[in-house]
Image 1 (cartoon, helix red, strand yellow):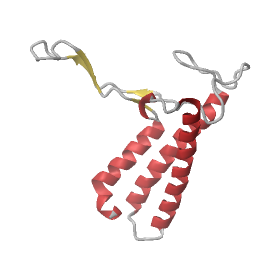
Image 2 (spheres, helix red, strand yellow):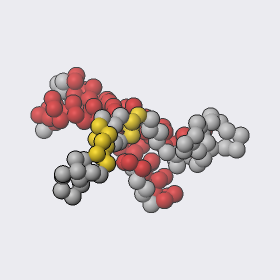
Image 3 (cartoon, one colour):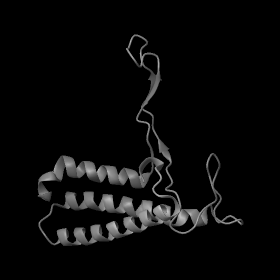
Length: 148
């Protein structure tokens, strides 16, 4: 789930991962069908970015729990002797990019939030998330009319 939200514990995590796999399969079939039409190449690239990002996140959540140990505030160890931190389909998606564009405080004269700390662009993300976001923006900005 987005931003580390939990969904139904152990069983929910497995169902979510299986649901992701099914949706990606349907998405690949959809792209194959669209590629036979007169869909612009840019729209197909945008869909490919979305599906590719989804596959990357599925790989993370499916296998990383098995092949890495817990890495919160540490460097993860590959194939640790004690085993991974979780089982198949229960891993966490690895996020590694953080670009706070503005890290400051609201002006003191501002009502309600005056003097409070704020960070503009707080999300932590990975390459797969970036691919999904770029693909969605491409469709919304350039190819929206092609998906009627």
